[in-house]
Length: 248
Image 1 (tube, rainbow, N blue to C red):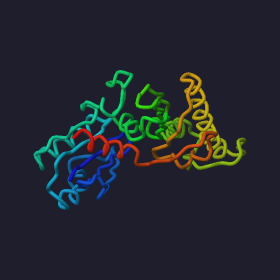
Image 2 (image 1 turned 30 degrees about the horizontal axis):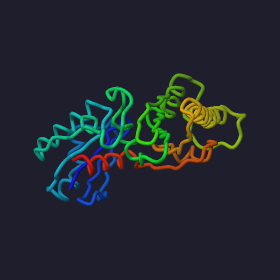
Image 3 (image 1 turned 180 degrees about the vertical axis):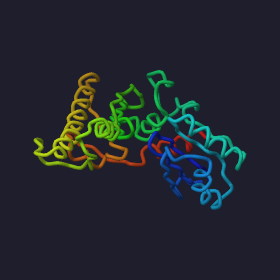
Image 4 (image 1 turned 90 degrees about the vertical axis):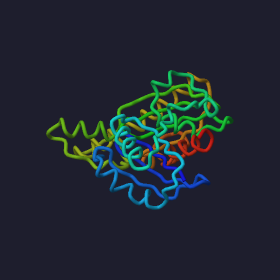
């Protein structure tokens, strides 16, 4: 059995993986609520289910939280977490940028998608909205834009007359109320950003791409952009499983 995890700025996903690399259990915890008590409480079911844990493999973009999990697992299982960014990933992907400048979640997403036949653009709707570009087995780099909810929350917290908005699809562009205007700006504004980024990536690389959406708002934008795309909410976890299967 293996424990794998993805520590993001918004949430932490922890999975128990069997020896056939199938997910047996998944736990999701809000990152801002993480503390030693919360970790112990949420992971008790995984630790009880099977103590025969071979390895623990994580991706992380929050060093402080990673250290908390590392301490917990080392104290309770005497196993050190393997951070995927520290592994030699060349067998799985050819990274054409300084890997220190790329989040391990983005590398995991890219490894999950890569098949050495197709080109991919991976758009992750997280705390930031990121675009990662893969040509065959090469990771070329990407784009980081402000996250949708981060931008929306900043707007509503700074502008006294703008209420909190439940972001959802809006069929028209011109809003007749403040709510409609903000909803249109974020829904169609980010759809336009996504379409334009895809167009610019294609122009720069002179290549065609398959597009994968992941993260919390992936379903919302699947049908609002001009490019045909697929949604995979577990892309990061699948990438970590692929790393575990091939490199651990």
